[in-house]
Length: 325
Ligand SMILES: NC(=O)c1ccc[n+]([C@@H]2O[C@H](COP(=O)([O-])OP(=O)(O)OC[C@H]3O[C@@H](n4cnc5c(N)ncnc54)[C@H](OP(=O)(O)O)[C@@H]3O)[C@@H](O)[C@H]2O)c1
Figure 1 (cartoon, rainbow, N blue to C red):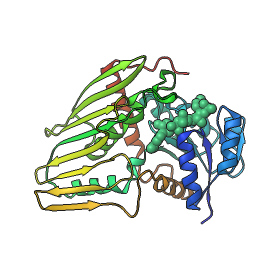
Figure 2: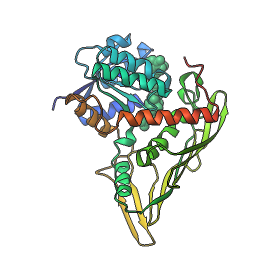
Figure 3: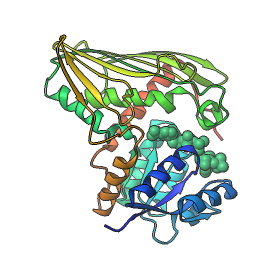
């Protein structure tokens, strides 16, 4: 198969990780990129291929571009996704998809009008492990689920950059809390009740605790922090007959199913998947080339629903994104 040709908007940390994996795969190439600092864009292009442009329009419409990957801070996702769609290009945009559900609605409506592909780059939807957890639950392997805990604690406070910058929609919610919310939505849909509390400082949410309650009594506890490196990341789903556990649930990592003392099954996928972005890029390239306007893995309905949940949580914790650049 001919290599799939990407335009990258944003050439920061994740862009570099993804670019090197795409190159290594031999199935993708970067033909153009744009970032506000042209010198940085040029250095990125020299390292990973393609041409750096001094305007996003030139990068998006560069010869051969088949899809635009948006990998800027959250505040700029909408702007470049809208521009790319208006210029007639399919869009694969990092999580959190936009800052508000309203922006997501608008992008979906533009994509539908123009019959163009639009998809959130939320790798949890593409993860073989997350898919296996869903299969085990749907098959009733651990019986009726009564509770689940998701914990995602890291420390990005103290690092300079987008994570703590209110102007770039920094904070825990859009950066990391979006993962357990997506995971829970994917398994159980929208909850009946949402209760959230958070610590907000200097315009960003440092951490939050959220409880989702479902109509059948299922409780999902979510704890996320960008100001704590203790406890890291873990998931525990408890059912009547057993539990499912994963240490790094949001990444392409393995998981374990346990029943009583002796029954234990582990799933590792088909290789060392942690921090691998290849599944999602392969899937999206295939969908775009086959003329789809929606991903076969990430329904736009789900992206919209997750953004609506984030809006509700943001209102509950009193967070606003009024000073975006
Ligand atoms: N799926 C995952 O596992 C994962 C992991 C990490 C990050 N992410 C997501 O990926 C995105 C980027 O994160 P990152 O860590 O790579 O951020 P980063 O290192 O800060 O890089 C952001 C890039 O976007 C550029 N940029 C910033 N504002 C821009 C604007 N208005 N217009 C054009 N370019 C702009 C920056 O360069 P200039 O400032 O020079 O323009 C930089 O090249 C975020 O949405 C984040 O949530 C996902």
